[in-house]
Amino acid sequence: MTLAPNLHAADLPNGFVPQSLASAVSEEDVREAQDKWAAGVVDIGRVYREGEDYVARAAKHVDKLYAYDLGPVLFKPTLATDVPFRPTAQMALSYFVGGEIAEDRGFALKPWRSVRFGDQRISLRGQTALAMGLYLFTPYGTDAPTQVEFTFGYIRDAKGDLRINLHHSSMPFTPPLLQPIEGAIADG
Image 1: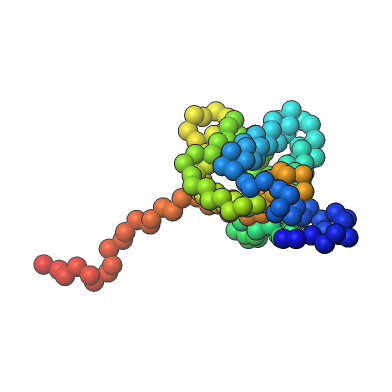
Image 2 (image 1 turned 30 degrees about the horizontal axis):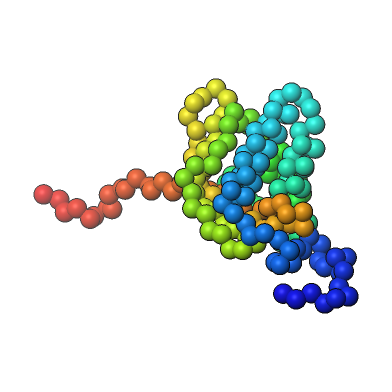
């Protein structure tokens, strides 16, 4: 991309970083963004337990880590059924702490003792990256984590930070128990 000599940063879309000015996303960048996300989820629960302003903490999590201010974010949370997609920051905030959407109970308020990203694959594409794999959520009172499948997409913002523009997570598929089909087995 060649910039015209009279083009100023103020003329660029909010948060846009010309490819020639930003470094390519690395696997280390992705893992650092994942660590921030995981620590943020744990910290929202801590703030809630301590009776502090957990909504403000969660809003900071969404504002700093998701790219809602840069363009569309595709967010499909694990425990969302009635309103499965969260195209706005307010709807994402509701998922983390409850509020705007009736089905939301505050996922981050569980609280979680630890959240960690496990086995995954990372695809690097210049200024963007995709990661798909498993993350593990361990609540207080147990050492048994809940395994969740995820896909995250990342873009670099004007400051060079990775921001989430795709977040899909779901519980692993559990096949139904096979039931005999009536009449499928002949008598006698």
